[in-house]
Amino acid sequence: MTPEPSYVPGVGSPLLVDPILYGRIATEGDSRTTIHSEVIPIRSGRAWTAPAGSVVRFTIIEGPQVLDLNLWNVANPRERFWAARSRQFYGAHVTTGDRLWSNLPFLRPLATIVADSIAYGLDEDGAGCHDLLGTRCDPYVSQLLSGRAYDFSCHSNLLRAVLPHGLTEYDVHDVINVFQVTGLMPADERYFMKTCPAQVGDYFELFCEVDLLMAASACPGGDLSVPLWGREAGGEPNCHPILVEVFGLDPHLLETWSPPTRAAYRGMRGTPHGLNVYDGAPPSLTDAALVDGIGT
Image (cartoon, rainbow, N blue to C red; front, top):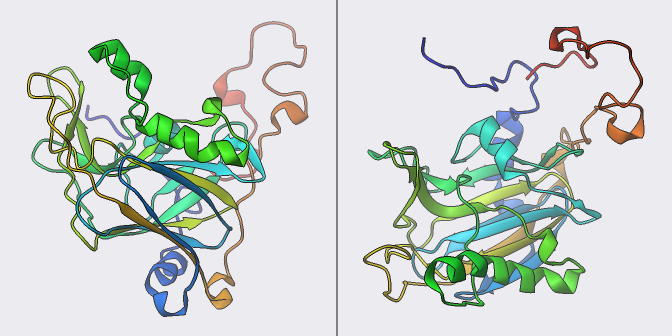
């Protein structure tokens, strides 16, 4: 029997977005106002805030470049992007209409992808773009595997970027690798990376569902055309800066939009997680109470 996805959204599912609302957000750009704009230099990281209801655009301005991105709820950074759950909902690679969800116990969309000029799909090797399979490069694994210490990996770049915002190394988390093409080897499912397909003018846009702190690193691997590991590694990567812009929207576009609420499950605010006392074996999954009537 052919397997099916574990999470199949039904009518009214929060995994889906209103195509009319989000389509207008993406296409009615003439009314946008610039809130913030800066260039992320090569092999560097930057952090900034973006209010709920704004759009953040990442643009290729000089040449192909991979970007590692972290997201936090600016009011409570314990709520942050959850790559694994987002991957389970939408797949290993995301594009327009997919959402970036937060960790437990919050579990709500932090941002929604509203535009993706690349629209890569899956290639002949089963690889896709805008990767949720891998994580950020970091100095720990670099020294572990190569014996060399390098202080400008994406992990380190993100760390330096968020320190002024009161966060620490423990807050840096698994990323969405924007503009990065990856896949799994067919024989053993090991991770592989391919050359970034982005060209000057390509862009990727996120609609902020809540007030966000965002941090991004222009990966020192550049466009990944030069192998970072293996027999052919050792060359100088091709690195380019990336432009980030935050845009405010005309309020009329958001008349039918409201910020998402955190997950309805009461968590530690009640007597959940089986912490209440019961006799006998735990109840079966089929005995779970339907709370809000919305399925996956």
